[in-house]
Length: 245
Image (cartoon, rainbow, N blue to C red; front, side, top):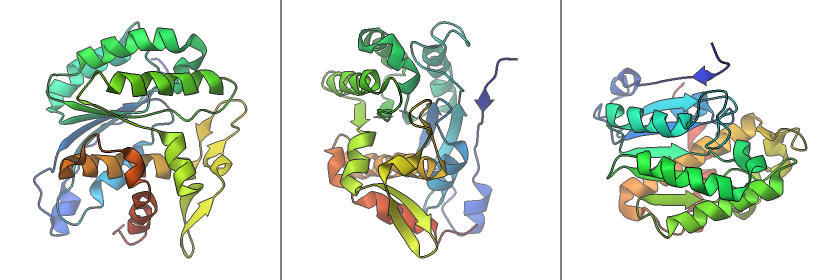
């Protein structure tokens, strides 16, 4: 069995007990690599007073669009092609790219087109760019540029610049003893010089970004300038401090 982490969650009973509308607000297929935080994603998509999202979360260690040899050529693309319609996904949300940095932006661009073509027609894609850190930071930043360029040609694609959002917030928001504290951006990451894996703070911020931008899309703000929503990140994290356990 290949080394991987796969988590699929479809939990609605708890929110029904809390008096929420059990009908899903939307179906979310959340797929990414080992930086994709399953627990935090489930928490952020369910701490809603009115109507939770129905979520399927998939986290695959080391996977990228180009870097997929451990799983088989085109694995991410074929996984989305098969899973999104089976789950009736309204949104595919991802953060792929950091594992593809060493392959270069051109290789990523070729695979990106194939990945997006595999998403069922009418399903929106929200792509949070990978954080440009570690030894391939320059190449990962170039992948972010490829994604932004692709957005101009793909009306169902919305690209959220992770690094720019963190910079606009002023650091890495994290829950502290007295509410939300803002830590230096480097505090989001573990051993950034070598592997770029997110800490628990980074996982919380990344998962909160997913929730904030899916909420915006559902509220008629799909493809709005993502920087307009940067200030909502801290408020959204603060809500989790008062959410039921």
